[in-house]
Length: 338
Image 1 (tube, rainbow, N blue to C red):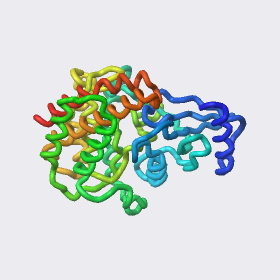
Image 2: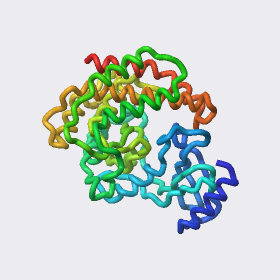
Image 3: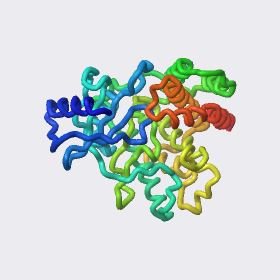
Image 4: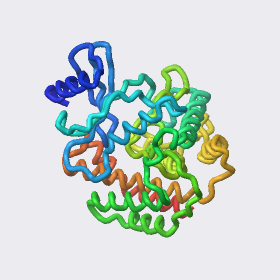
């Protein structure tokens, strides 16, 4: 964000009644491949700005206005979110829609194995992660004014169609395993079971902030993919992430001795979630995990295409992430076969 944009943002913020203590400065966060995110500082005050990226964008992608709406609605609920300050839908200010929210101090954990922590601390943090996920799915969407936040109908049928379209729109070559996964998911869609909740859409440990000195979650971030739908999509997304390789790229738990580290198994985490929501068990959970791999593969394909088109927030990282699309498709078929 250059100096001219910062001046425009500062002028706009003051017009929204947001007090500044001096000149506005910005530092771009390394995270946020989809929507560029900045920490703004003005004297002793600190804010966070999220904006749509520049360039030609897919329809319905990078919906920062939806992020703003859902987080504002969740204020005061059992789901911790940053305080929303103002949304700017006038692209003339800095060239794209953006919003400003309060900056929340907290620990960002990008490795679910949590090196350096004790087994007790690890288990407490993942227990809190499970509690907050159940809280997301328990909010009263009617009372929060979110009854129209997503279309009606079979969530996974709708999402399969959406992400297949997104994948086709950004496809840069044929991936046989991806085609097989799309076909399998279409042939094995679960029947609607009446569950329709708020869905975060990208619920994983690195999208949460935890207290500096404890396991309490102080903010759930990155609501770009949120909608109304089936809660098992979020739960399967957590399990999908853990099946990836450990390290900075995969950020998974594959091959790790979880018991020795105090980390729950997939089955233990799912059982804890079911207990908190009063559910006896989840049938055919492999479908939901397979779908989670498919959707992430489609998302990463979009990240790769933006890098090739010159619109990625971090082009080198975007290309690395895009190279994992065939592997995600392969893991999705493995989950389907299970």
